[in-house]
Amino acid sequence: MVNQEMLSYGKQASVIRELFEQAKREKKLIGEENVFDFSIGNPSIPTPEKVNQTLIDLLQKEDSVLLHGYTSSAGDLTSREAIATYLNQKYQANLSGNHIYMTVGAAASLTICFHALIEEGEEILCFAPYFPEYSVFAHKAKAIFKPVKCDKDFFPDVQDLEAKITEKTKIVLYNSPNNPTGAVYPKERLEEIAALLEKKQKEYHHEIYLISDEPYRELIYTSTPYPFITNIYDNSLVCYSFSKSLSLPGERIGYIAMSEKMKDVEDVFAAICGAGRNLGFVCAPSLFQKLIPSVLGITTDISLYQENRDLLCSILSQLGYEYVKPDGAFYLFLKALEEDSLSFSKIATKFHLYLVPSDSFGCKGYVRVAYCTKKETIQRSKDAFRQLKEYYDEVKK
Ligand code: PLP
Image (tube, rainbow, N blue to C red; front, side, top):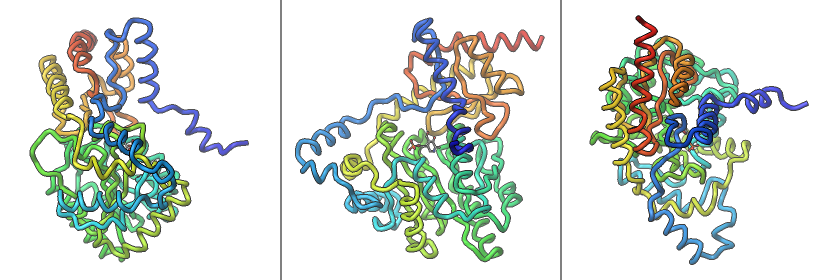
């Protein structure tokens, strides 16, 4: 007999994966050019040349035993210090490489943080809509996962946060730029959250940690500077990943960084190391750790995502669809044309459009359109979006 909870997680594929597989099958049947797969958040822009060249150099020039050997559990100190120096220069963040933990991507960063900070039955509050895996990670850490509302722009609703915080709240989690809405949370809103958490920490006499999950940090299409959370709130942690900024999702490399002003920072870091050890997330891939110092500050050509976003927005606006223009990431949250987004997503597949229903993101009545596709896919999808709209216009008559 296997663990029943794990069995159920293993058996129930995510909606995103199901749609992705269905689109793949349909592509085989009717041709790739006739299917408009907006299901999955797989970067579509090539990895920067500097990344490939540095990997080749490392493989050719470095001692292969050292290059492929174990690093320390928390990661190679040179890479961790390079990350701290980079973040300090870019955001005046005052971080230390001693408190950076290298991980196999943001998923591991989050899982480690949850296990390091949560005692059974404590709460993780998170702004909805959110990345569906959060609730899976929270559940495994024996936390209670509580969604908090966003406003009409998909920014955090601080009043709802205040209403939902209890003495059991240990973590408040946010993700900006956001998956699935593409919203980039303004600095002022994060400052309001920080002020509220300061107040609640005093009231409850314990720490409340603010975690920023930021795999899309570099994918922003405005000139507004990114508000770096350790400058805003002392008990804060950053979960980062190079999956999207360098188009390296399959290589599994990221990190956890924490504010140096955090209370008991040494103990928190030790708990992070302990959780990493407990979960088997030690010594992230050595080759990719050693790549990082040479490619910090480099990103894929995100102007291509911006072009995709602009094209998609112009098509949807022309056809009369409702959405909030996304400022970051590579997702657009589209108002479904009926209340039931699952049914809307199903109808859309009749027109070969693959859109992810919003229920799994903790929010009803929308679909997520992942526009990290070829530009031609968006261009050619116009007719399908038009037919979908006409179908609903007809139903409403
Ligand atoms: N957090 C968010 C918001 C994401 O969208 C994703 C992946 O799509 C992750 C975390 C996990 O990223 P990684 O590939 O680095 O594990």
